Image (cartoon, rainbow, N blue to C red; front, side, top):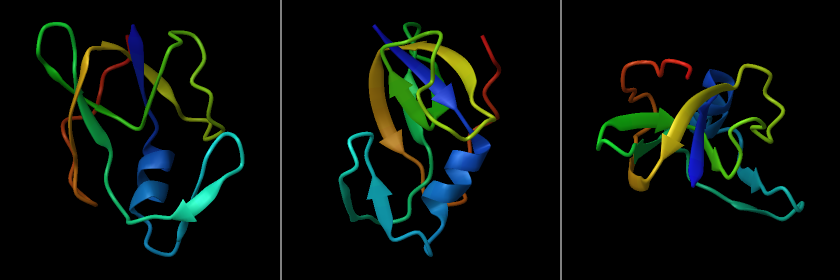
Length: 92
């Protein structure tokens, strides 16, 4: 099962055109295009706006400091455009 997390700080960083590189957990970096948060579906088909998806319901695995657990998710739906937002996620 995958778990969704949201960080407004991370969402703003993802949209920032002055941040030209995406750095993975293993230290790889590559050029990236600015984009907004991701939208995933939960088990009931409701959309959830996320900035991180992983296997843990207890650890986000990022360093932003404002991460909140959104809940379990089942399927990726789409990426939002920079500046586009769904209603703010409510913590689970």
